[in-house]
Amino acid sequence: MQEILERISVQVADAFEAAGYDRKLGRVTVSNRPDLCEYQCNGAMAGAKTYHKAPFMIADEVADRLSGNAMFASVESVKPGFLNIRISGDFLADYANQMAEDRERLGLEKEAYPRSIIVDYGGPNVAKPLHVGHLRSAIIGEAVKRITRFAGNEVLGDIHLGDWGLQMGLIITELHERRPDLVYFDADYQGAYPEEAPFTISELEEIYPCASGKSKEDEAYHAAAMQATNELQQGRRGYRALLDHILRVSVTDLKRNYENLQVCFDLWKGESDAQLYIPAMVEKMKQDGFAYFSEGALVVDVAEKSDTKEMPPCMILKSDGSSLYNTTDLATLVMREELYQPQEIIYVVDKRQELHFTQCFRTARKTGIVPEDTRLIFLGFGTMNGRDGKPFKTRDGGVMRLENLLADVNAKMLEKILAGGHMEEEEARKTAGVVGLAALKYGDLSNQASKDYVFDLDRFTSAEGNTGPYILYTIVRIKSILKRYEEENSLDGLQMLSPASSSEKELMQLAARFGDNFRIAYEELAPHKLCAYIYDLSNAFNRFYHETKILTEENKAQKSSWIALLALTRRILEKCIDLLGFEAPERM
Ligand code: ARG
Image 1 (cartoon, rainbow, N blue to C red):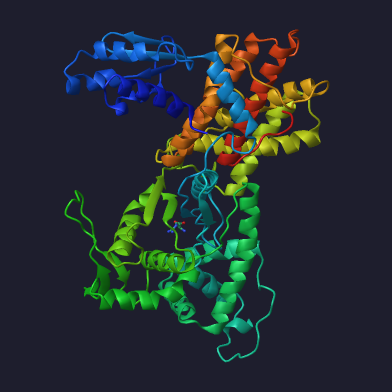
Image 2: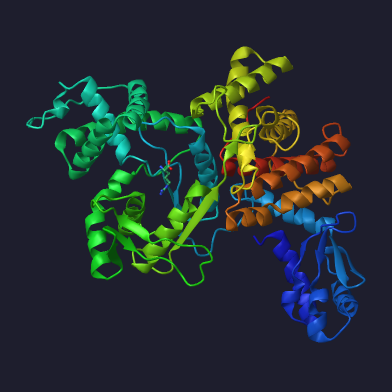
């Protein structure tokens, strides 16, 4: 069904047209003065110049045409030329009832022209532990994936593992030092390699930082790691076998971690999968005259006249012929084009990588790797900081591991739940896990992605204010009322009546605007707007709830109308948190 703002706008536009004006002037917005009206239209102000008329005269004519329209409770023309609009309770209830009938989509229409979209997010580096830097990509990317998918598009989430490059050479080198007798290092070995990896995940996680430290101090060690990387890239058998082990062990661990975050990828492709596309891609760039040698390196110019900042050429191959991060991302585009032909790719990556993506996008377009109408979108996010305003660290200043961060949040939540004193330890633990994840995700998603934000454990886990737990409390409260009602009645077939109070009308209005708010969050790829919406909706519910004795209401039709409104509110809240990537517990 049409979004409610659209429905209202159509009526107002009709009135503008009928009075002889451009119907575009009839666009209606939610009022920013809720004390005066619910919706407003400023079209008369905008049209005054074109029609050489005082705006209030236009507004008067339009208001006249709308009087008697059943959609409105009142349409007032207010000097100097605003239209202040209130909608009728019957129209509103009717709209809300229609939404409620559509349990799955709450009236939300699917994209008329669905696109195939890839969301490139997560981007963890194999063999290095997941840290908070990867947290934002996972959280925001997951929400973007779910939102674009719910809109009706064909969406694939790709983790794009960082599984290529020096870190692999480092691990191989360190392993060689420790266990030179392993069969993987015997260049003459022709047989099959063992099924089992020669290390566990914890060993792997210790090996990498150790090797990385050594390579910074010891030049010969660094050279050996470079050499190993190179041989791996050239396809040395034993090293490829080790890479496969590293990948398997690492991916198992990553899957567990992402599962705990309720983040789930459709594709587990990595940088290494793109490598085989590089030679042909580079050859073509050269042949077509786009790539040329500059100081030994192969580059493509990407500067454009309109650039205000310096735009260095995109480097495709280093002077020693080896490939770079750019090369891998471009080859990944070649691969995606071949396998999926996406119409849109959304990269959810730290905003400090913006230059890299601008260079890649321009190169991809210029050299024809992607068709002209493919949308390449860089959704850059800011840093999660500690209370000191610096990037979030552990207490002793180290890199915070994602697992530990999540454990901290859950422990804090558990402490709060147990302090409430009405839950046994076991249930409290489970609940803390669910609520903790919501606290963490909502704390992140409620900020505009591009901005830095401060990770504040106390605030994020608070049940009051604009937090995940507050939203969940609201849902749990509604669920418990519905459950009590259901003990004696059925929830099926309930109808909302025209609202009886202003707090009820406010709640119904907000519920009815689910579609409008979803659309904005979707079109702008802005999960924080969905957060702002459910915060408003929760506030409206809580106001209504405090003013209304629902379960003790004597009038049956009235009571079931309120219950229907609660059921709709619950469904909207649950739909939205699902889109944001978390869920509500049964009790709290
Ligand atoms: N692995 C990279 C990092 O940790 C992020 C990958 C982002 N995605 C991409 N297509 N480059 O910085």
